[in-house]
Image (cartoon, rainbow over all chains, first blue to last red; front, side, top):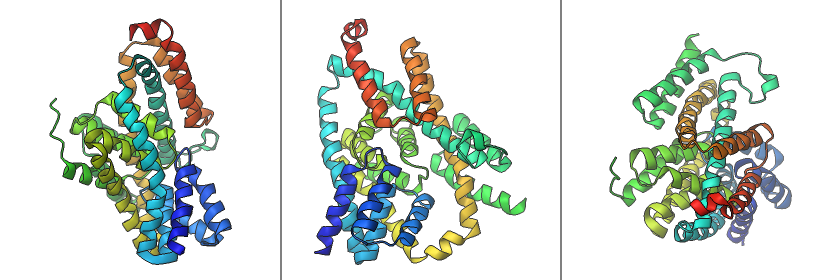
Length: 186
Length: 187
């Protein structure tokens, strides 16, 4: 039964993709391309491109991509459900324990030590995106020229966010429109 | 500032908007959720955002989905959790289904390519804005140990590419060790 197979494969991807995003890619290649033959290598490459060009997590995007191809919209929904079910079960359990025990002394100290680490991880992701935006690469040794339009947009957006608390959705939209126009003019 | 009344409808549509427009991966979603649910609506505190991020990152699965599950739960229980998860996956299902149909035109279009490239500047500004707020909160505590640990974790994650699971486990071990010392007795 195809639906069940789709569900089970994506359940495994949801269950074993630790570390988010790109951690899911080898699993998808292994299970979907090599294991089941649901995608060809060329389609897998297309999937990677689409995942990079669209919002949404790679695993969830790939669930719709594979599900659509194999069984249309119902297939997409079945794959997506399979993919998020492990998250729902595991994170809800953790959330329950967090709510129940977070005022315990030991838990408080551990959470207090974890917070700076989480800030650091968000900052790390931020720096990678910033370098990619301004220099087209996030590897320091490969940086050779600044993209001036992006630098201008970044500075302007940061000013709007800090000073006027502009809505982030407007920022994303605004940079897309303003930047594309600037590239067309210059 | 006053905590706004919790509304399931608002939770659903906020999550859906964030999911539909957030390019750039899990941590950008966290930044957007913090802006919406902490800065704007005051439904969760800053510390809770960081705790929930650590928990979401420790579980398997996409960070965006995991954080939707836990933010939803914290805001409105199991019902809130299911609703915000649903809201998070609807946009990818719709967007990918549409793009599958127009893939060739979409992936070779110069305007689309340029827009996606310049959009990163805006995404970078949003996450830098959030990081400034979060890091200054840690620095304001004047807790030298935590400030040093934040710097160490930053170098580990960004420069040495240590995986977040390893960092989280190390910091949990450190926290457990600390809870038996002076700091633990103060807490």
